[in-house]
Image 1 (tube, rainbow, N blue to C red):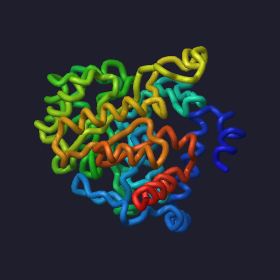
Image 2: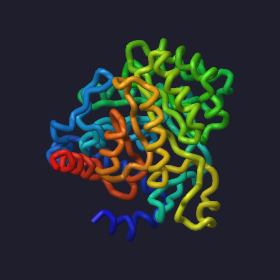
Image 3: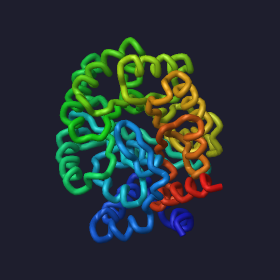
Image 4: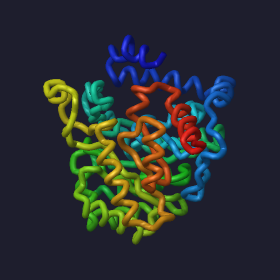
Length: 343
């Protein structure tokens, strides 16, 4: 039913409007007694549990950052069968993000271009929301992705990240440092090892016992990816998230005029599959076997998720295919993983 609904109705709406409408439905699915009914239909099989970061994940498949920027849909997403939800990106200072329109579908590629620009209500608002979630949904695994506030100069980025970490780490199951979005000027420059190491060191200290991960870009040269992975291990981080959206437009099926009309921004979805696997293998080869690696990018089917797990991912995240597969995508992945494992 959902593919028909998407083609006939949802695809006609502005993508950002459609997302907010969908999030309203997701929020309802997380409210008792609806949540209980939803969970009965979507709950992952116990055999899919994964122990990582000192936590137990009900499923290896979770929701990537960017889908729920303000931690408003966590309960609904958990009820839909996702093993964890990474909220954000959250910045220390609230910001509106980039001018609209800023989200574009490439339907032929099952992809999206976004230049949202870290639109969010800020760390204080996120902390209040997370505190309520901790009381009402204590068993849900919630990661928090933090980024640089746009009004803060790059040379002051460390203090800005530390402010967010100090406020949010006590409420997060893990914290992810986003230095890889293409939509905040100067942000990706922070990925240089000599710049990134002291930033992560300061954020790790501010995070206390909360596991800290770093999210990297797929557009880095292979040797730099390996160098960041080695540095993350040396600095005592808990893991790496590989990876963010890409600025590449190679190999798309969508016509050039449509792609050019969408303009700048990060590309996500099915076209990233090959590079995502390459980056995952590069990272896994550079870190110990017990180091957490979260794979993101180009994931749509249970076979895609299992392929990432087989390639060394500890956990897998998705986002873009939610737009194309619908609200029961998490259930579809979990049921498919179970089928694949049982042969």
